[in-house]
Image (cartoon, rainbow, N blue to C red):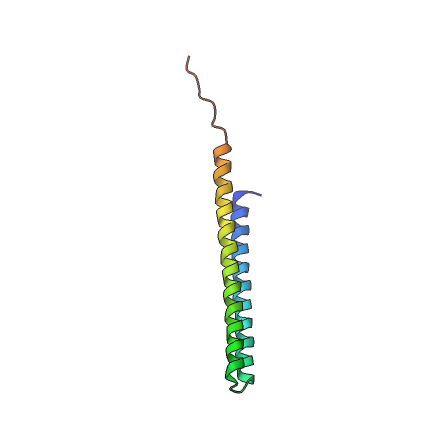
Length: 95
């Protein structure tokens, strides 16, 4: 693959990864709201549902951001390593 395809692939991965996280977080929030609505004021259970939902949303978001950060760091290290290993062209001699 050439560089433009690599950049586009990385953009697509980031876009769809973020979309998956957002959709998952919305689904978790929707289920939590529905659960709270159906509990009819049982405060101790509502606190448990909201705590579990908050934990799930924060874990999902943190995992995505952590994986993305590690991926970006590894990519930049690999690029720097490849640039350092590229041999310089030989110096030209003048007669």
